[in-house]
Length: 130
Image 1 (cartoon, rainbow, N blue to C red):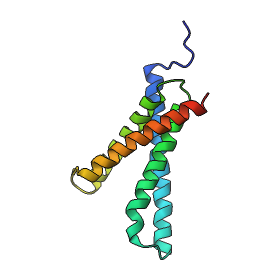
Image 2 (cartoon, rainbow, N blue to C red; image 1 turned 60 degrees about the vertical axis):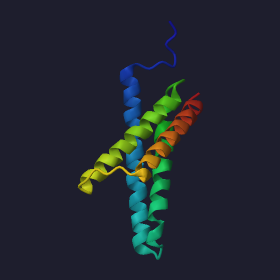
Image 3 (cartoon, one colour; image 1 turned 90 degrees about the horizontal axis):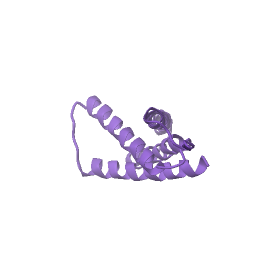
Image 4 (spheres, rainbow, N blue to C red; image 1 turned 45 degrees about the vertical axis):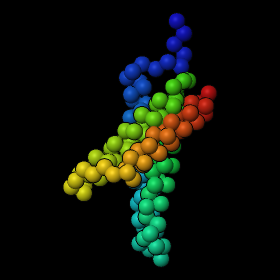
């Protein structure tokens, strides 16, 4: 049998975890840089929501692309998994930090956008990895 491009479940799971870890790390770096810029300049605090959503989206795209580079197919599924786990991780961490689990329409939209961006990143990663 030709096993080129096929990954075992363990390798696929490792790939997804690696993508989530890269996304989370890049998010921390991006948010830290933004916090320093926000503190040291006269940028309005009203930009926080837009910048955080942008950082999250870019980090999901990068993480899902990196996660999917080593595989030949199913990049969209791999990317959606990275986006979903990333957002679930952020949701749990923020809920613990804020002492409450709240799910509103904004959270649901963010989850949907994150999964869509993860799928797009997965497609990009598969095509870059060829």
